[in-house]
Image 1: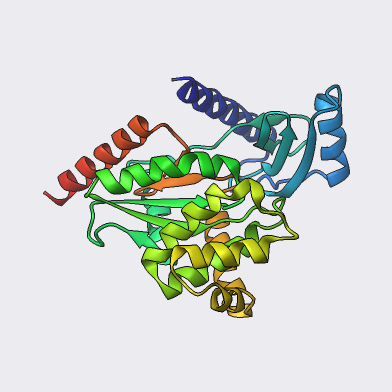
Image 2: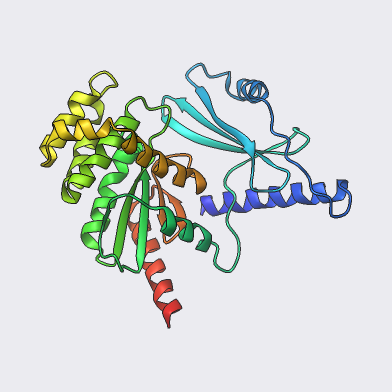
Length: 295
């Protein structure tokens, strides 16, 4: 309920901005986005969060948004409670920022993302290829939140035979061994699909013991433990074509506005990590909608 209220509030603010732009612009004239400088964003964040020495931030991107006239700023806040993605939409005059997510709209609001996923997914999957529901999981093997969400995904796979789960690597830039782990995972999958799911479970289990300095040693051993030859996996992970495959997965996520992990898509519907009962309701609803659409 709180999330719905937030969406409605953000939507109201965006409509207010759009109306204001229309009133101030010439008829039919487009309003161009005016992205702020990195210096301005850093100053803004300092004014808002500088009071807490435990908080730090990193600017992930500054770009024009898909909404005409607005700029999009993506930030990662870090503190005692972990990391949190913050997205801001900046008005053309640079005087106001709206925070939150923009909801897709229309009679079938998730159809565009679903088509994008159908064209672009290249990750390993479990479940029937013709399942009525596909859940795409964009995850980072170094991400603690992904580790926490992994049992929920495993439970869904084991208990729901009408769902197909696809894992898409999305290593975050602030994690120093995540990209390497994604490369290892890609190679493990190409060697053995069954071993892949064991491997990522093993990596999540050993997450706190892995560092950038020992990542190759640890990941090689974890690949051995998953049932494939770790030395061969390490050699594969170092190849440029493996890096390209991981980058393709990341590019797909960015095209779908993924900026934090884990991010799930249930038949194209973007959702954050949620409790199992909520995820199951979303899957059941998507399956029912798919069945009715075929009638």
